[in-house]
Image (cartoon, rainbow over all chains, first blue to last red; front, top):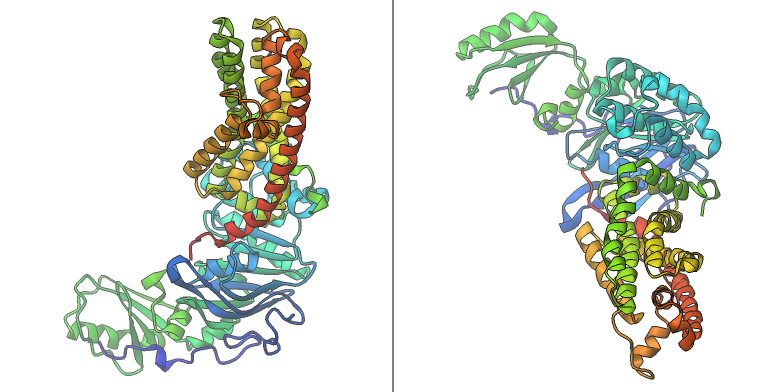
Length: 335
Length: 251
């Protein structure tokens, strides 16, 4: 293969943006746990190790301010859920600190939809709303059940809800008390299109009202559409932290040509100049500055190498390309 | 402790018990079925009292420990704590509510035991002692659940702790006067239940033989036990959240 890109060719972090770099736009870290002005939640050298010293995360410096929707994105095992759980207080840091600003209320939806199975949908939502926000919080429950399409199942025992229904209920429970800070783990998993759209509206409204949202996600489409900031995690470390547009700049906005080939993949293909190839499990993702105009030369190069092409797709760059650009690792290899 | 969450765990326990109707029926029927052969077989009073005491206390301790451990294993306890429910409130309110539920469920069996011995007028006394004993047993159950790391470990801890306390309470054998066991019995929390059962099943003969003083001492020991176990449970709750937070998660 020629033209394969390595991580060394790319900046470790995006070039610009209000939160460019692995360190947020915050004052230099002072004493551990020192407050970050304007932030609802922040970390200082936050690290976590699982038992038997298996490294999971860190050290991480992150600050999330009012009005932000931050997507923690990365492949499985990158540490995004661990970071979210540390921010929620669901895990205790091995070292460093994760701090929420005093008086910040929190809504948290973990990756597993655990409910009170003996109670019905509405009772579950009302119970968790009461626990987090007191009796007044229950007022929003009926509206949210309707918004997420659970209105007709309000009297259904939680144990009888579908997987998607249980995921929706989890979101209702996290949102009902109108928290300042929403921490959501894979919030779009299991949701139908209408519920995803409703979620986007609710999260934008929460951020617009002065709250903040942090979501761990593998759904890069949702991250690109919704987040004001995307934090890429790779092997437990923050490798990029910037708005989606800035990250797409990092991917040079070049057209991608995805080539899938049957195994075994040929060891060497002389792609034309101006085309950079990154290996994927199925073949290559080619970055073509000339866009689709490069297609004839690409096809010729493949034919010359005797490659039998299964599929070939031309598409604009996305956050997966940005991740690959930053880490030198194709998103799908691990995601 | 957060005032806004006051009573939520208590109400949840009650509501859950009422919703699980099959379990509710079983929890009434099974103790009745266990008491029935003993009550109708003409068993010696001290044997019957021991059987009933063991049944009632194990019912309370296991009924508190195992469901709480199951809830912890499936992530519900973690959810409640991260959601804002204070651990001490969760444990103490859950034990209090479960004690009331257990008393309601065991009342038919207790009435049957008394009726078979012709001691039905003693029902209010026995039920009052039973409620206090079940509070003790449930507190012990949630304490065990708070320190155990699995359902199996919890069951083992609950069985060992309960049987030792029952033994110390003189349920299995009467200690020799003046012995260390007799001193221990005076401070053992299940003595009140055993003494009350023994007194009523013997038609008051034990009371006439000085059982009243013993009964008062038993109530005192039970009160002491309640305070001690509640304090231990509160202490355990301080460590519960930390223990959950240390647990392995997924990356």
